[in-house]
Image (cartoon, rainbow, N blue to C red; front, side):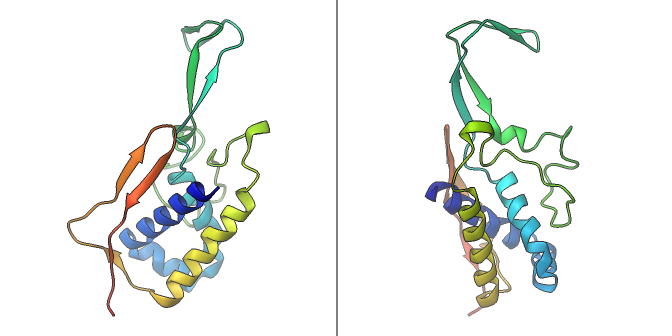
Length: 161
């Protein structure tokens, strides 16, 4: 949805503003852009946790969950699992396989994921065409609002006119 795309575009701009070497790789090798989009949604997924109600008694990693208990599935953490993703904190436009849960999984998978990817890709391409050299405004950091969803509330960028 719109929240997903807006947050991911802001995340992409943050990554490119703080990593000029990555920005140059994308400018010099446009084939990296597809992986940059996937890395963006992996690291800047707007869905932090999804709530569910247990429908049966079960034990998970030594913790008893009873029927009717509310649990939160941490989708954001799953996209940074070091058992699935080598060096999961790194924004790597050469990562061979980008595994993430940014668009959900199974029957609850986001129906708009393909449109979201396209919107993120076009936003990056068009921004870089117009403003190939930019940075985070010195002394600033983005601010987030978080709960079940996370959104970047502001991102201050600077570039030459």
